[in-house]
Image 1 (cartoon, rainbow, N blue to C red):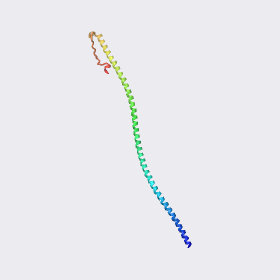
Image 2: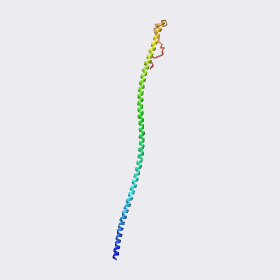
Image 3: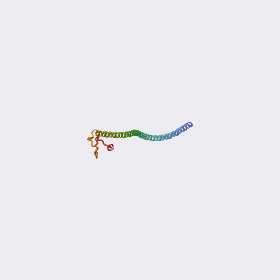
Amino acid sequence: MTTRRAFARQEESKLQLALQELKVSKDLCAQLHSEREENEKELLTILKSNDKLKASLTRLHIDYSDLSEERDRLKSIVVSFDECAVEYEQALKRITTLECELRDAQKYISELEESAHQATALHTHSLFEELVENAPELVDVTIENPVTIDLTNDTLPAQRK
């Protein structure tokens, strides 16, 4: 009987040891299960944070694209303004040149008109002289208040301006 008892004690001891190992395994399994739940919660929190960051990154990318388009549009406007400024400067130079040419032309016209007026006056005077020489009886040279008649209908340059 001792062998049965010893065998039963041995078996009981093995069972106690197995039960002890089973309890340790159960505790370890519960701890691992708890850690897994905590890790899942943390992972869900990280995933939510990641989604928020992705949404924020998407908004930032849209804003960046909008700003890039606005920058390009403003650059185009600046280039257009620069082109207008260059054309404006060229137009001012051309206007200045044309004003100088106009002044010179007006001066030349005035000189030509003065010269034409003098030529007409000389021609009229020479005709008068010729008339006096050829037919002195037609002209009374002893007029006290002579009247001058402008046959050319020209006015003096000072009166034209």
